[in-house]
Image (cartoon, rainbow, N blue to C red; front, top):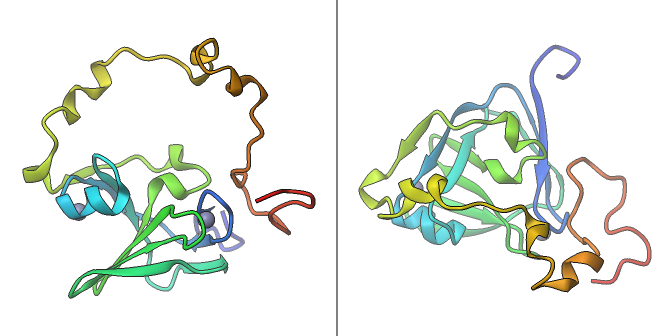
Length: 164
Ligand SMILES: [Zn+2]
Ligand SMILES: [Zn+2]
């Protein structure tokens, strides 16, 4: 929460070159199955939340943008490629997974269901394991050094001595 009680959100890309801050309530978090969102996110669907008008501030860097159609820009980090925005004349959507606390932003709606992949609904029923369950077949997981930006704002990034 900000000083005047507005909800406050932060987030950014995986490498930390682009960071954002949103002040005010997010509108209708949703997922979109449409083919353009699948491509833009390299994923089964996109998860986006609309930011309040004037409530978005880029606090470090700024996304690169690809014009995916006559009315829409897709923003992403030019350094690491993380998908970040859907920018249309009626508003800007931010990628839910890029927020520092995506667990607070539950989707309430699905769009583009005509393009929903045939297995999308079956994913929750697949067998599941934690990341480290794979450690015997992927021993590098045990000595992994993480270069991902942490889930909070930082004074400087990357830290000193960090190789890129
Ligand atoms: Zn990045
Ligand atoms: Zn879409």
